[in-house]
Length: 383
Image (cartoon, rainbow, N blue to C red; front, top):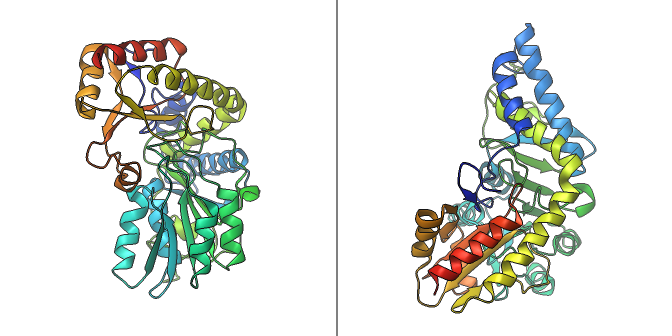
């Protein structure tokens, strides 16, 4: 469904428009709960604290986490991944990572590599899929502290075998850290059953929340050093951060309006998610079937019929990706994204590092009519 005359197919970057329930929750937090959460006993501070608690419980229930205290609010998925990687890995440790990771993983690992962490990369195939046997071989070839992988690719949509990777990591005494930015909200998740020791999610993509908040799940009992220190609203006399979750990892004032919006989104998804997932997968098939008929286009990622996140990226054999994206926007008011998508490793793996790709991201509110119009526009542009 077009909004404000725009067909929005950039949900892989951020979902839009936000559901009315999310907008209302943000406005309500700004107007009726304007105090500082967990700081002060006056009515506005207590109202803010209640919103944080309610939202944490809603997100935990959606993601299959029994104890909401294991759900930590962070400024975003990138921050959460930095906290996870830098909180687990130390000089001399060894980490195994796939060749299709986002810069939110690869850049922190590059910094850690400069500080004495050994980074071992496992090549994915040309569709962006990691072979669990290859990961196991890499893990078993040396003492390994952590295995890191994305749940789903923001370039190819490929869904990685996270459950198998968890078994491999645990058999070697390692922890599994998962970048769930492109999976959360688009897939039904039970994080405790999945087996990930740390799972990081973006709040503003498939979870439908506002920008400025993400989710970090840490398995009970796992020791992870906090990334920053500061006020936590309690134990202020102690020079160290509290050891209790989530206080240890939430230094400073929390973004109450964004968290309230995320909580509202989680409650909405608890009702709508199954239908939304089915609809997204139907639209992905429709888009891929249509794009496959356009001469000169190559679709990245798993073939039609293989489950993928609602991400479809293409390259043309003679028209630049940024030119296609420009014409989609300027002539047809269709919003997509072109380039390397902050994931050069994935583009290197799919042999598109020099060209980039045009990415279509499907999410809540996209209709079959939107897909038809996008296919018609692509046919004209690529003719």
